[in-house]
Amino acid sequence: MQGKGIQLAIASNKYQSATETLAEHYFKNFSFTAVLGQREGVPIKPDPSIVYDIMKKAGVGKEEVLYVGDSGVDMQTARNAGITAIGVTWGFRPSKELEQNGATYIVDSPGEILGLVE
Image (cartoon, rainbow, N blue to C red; front, side, top):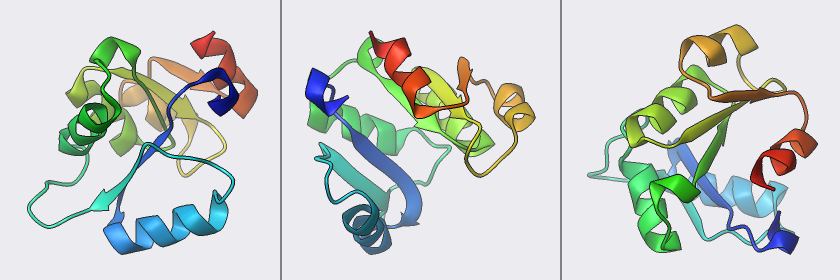
């Protein structure tokens, strides 16, 4: 996706320092527009505040955002922010939970996500 000029960001309910540490460890070859975790004074997901902060930093509108997540909370966050939710089946929760919480799409592999942005 980066090769296609698509901005990437991380929105997590983990503490900010833990989110940054995990991103650096697992995604060191990626460039993120924003890496945001739980911060003082900012409500946690499913409140959409973290998404709005990322959108502002990225300079994008709701129609340009795909929120990829692996839990019902992620799908609720996307719905609360008014953006498209993509649930992934290789993550934290079963696909049924993703469906029940408003996933617009459910994908079984990362390649399927790329197909949704083209």
